[in-house]
Image (cartoon, rainbow, N blue to C red; front, side, top):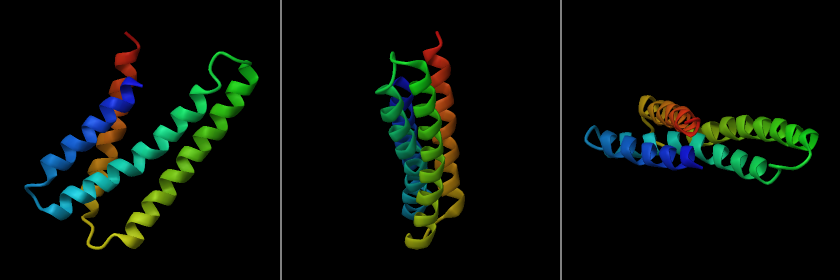
Length: 112
């Protein structure tokens, strides 16, 4: 859960830092962040419900949730590129990469 908080904070910081470039850059970054954050939130919700139970059920749920996360990320990216005009693609990918990296940092901090 700490990594989700770090990711949401990173999304807001990236959008704020992108705003001086242009408002389009800011919302593009925010959409990129959401394209990674929302599937991660879904994954966490699905997997956390199966914690502590049968390990085979947990592993199956984790595999299905990971497939759903990757699929939803692809669908959200496609929807943003189709429906959001104008879109600053560089800032969109900056938001995606920034939130992914923030998630990795959050996971590393949870190991302590």
